[in-house]
Length: 106
Image (cartoon, rainbow, N blue to C red; front, side, top):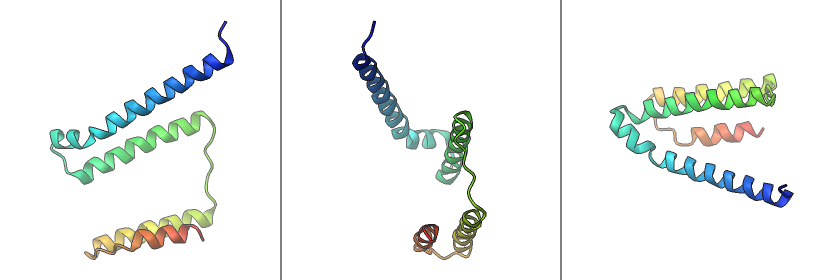
């Protein structure tokens, strides 16, 4: 019979293995963008899109989905609209993400 110490040791090894595998996979993302002949923006969109689906599925499975209050949801939407509008207008408003992040703490 295994002791608690052995189980913790095994869990630590599995965690470290997962961390190393994830780091290796992320380090090759630039190579896969080059091989796939897509723009970095398209690649970033799909990484965030599929990552969001996986994270949402995991949160739903563990019943850890917490819906934001209406105030926070509206503030997030306004910040997103501000960032997109500044990019569409052609200006490189480098401070937009900073101000939107600061508004999120309000």
